[in-house]
Image (cartoon, rainbow, N blue to C red; front, side, top):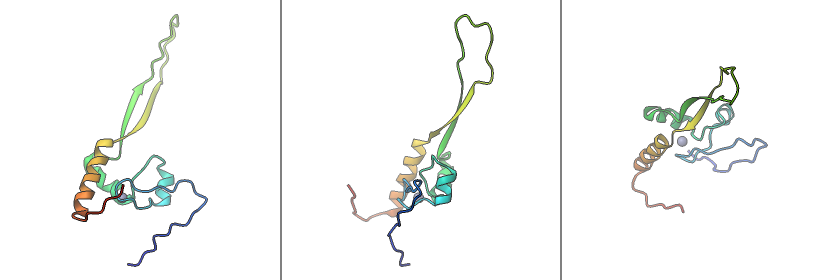
Length: 105
Ligand SMILES: [Zn+2]
């Protein structure tokens, strides 16, 4: 125990904090997964709610008028944040944190 809460400013721009527990996200992880907003611990936790991200793939529409040629290969996958899972996780966290009447505005 006895951790300093001083976070040194580094040149890295990928310093982010966990959306759930506000801990600094491990730099390696933050760089590896640019979209993540969860620390390692909560990234694991959120698996039970389906994961931090929802992968959705959509077929790109390539219908052009007058074009007889069909375009294939227009599938784009995108990651969407699993907002519901994240709020559930926050809920869990708040509950576990329990009774303290600390209110951060
Ligand atoms: Zn966390």
